[in-house]
Image: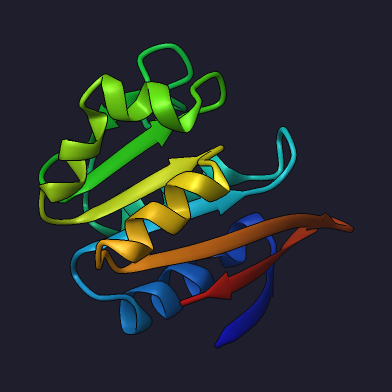
Length: 137
């Protein structure tokens, strides 16, 4: 099922509310979109809705940031599926909560689905002064 939501920055709570209503407590969420599409901005909105204080930034160089308990953020831009597996990062998905994955490969997504994880995809596309979020759960 694909849900399409158009939202500006001030309306991101609509997207977050839909995700909270739709996704299970433990999920891996692939964020897809061009540079500056709003992948990290959506993660910031989720963190804010969960009462997480502090700066939420893209883990471009560290690969993973953990925000409190239950919210994890990955940037796999420079990492191939094989490297991800060899580094042992796959085991991080065992932790309860939402795992926000930027630049995750199709191979990783297929693998995670194949071994039974709850995987969702959010395609983000700029549109005027807003974004179109195509949420596939």
